[in-house]
Image 1 (cartoon, one colour):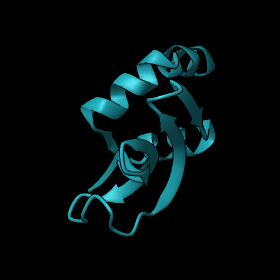
Image 2 (cartoon, one colour; image 1 turned 180 degrees about the vertical axis):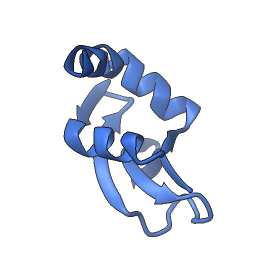
Image 3 (tube, rainbow, N blue to C red; image 1 turned 120 degrees about the horizontal axis):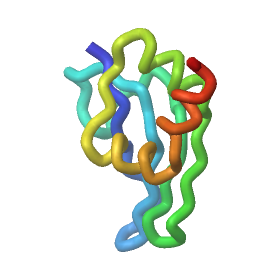
Length: 85
């Protein structure tokens, strides 16, 4: 099973996160299938690769709670509903 989850990057006390598609059995810092976004909690910036996220969600990938909250905050699901209708 594939999940969309955060992968920690950056320095001590200055964490930034990549949003990645990764196998459930892998570690947090393990090998990912594809990088699909970027999240910086300090500057509150989000960069998303929307086609890649849609692709993995259609294939059955499950976002973690945190990634789901980031996607909802970026209004990802509103855009997806508009394109599907």
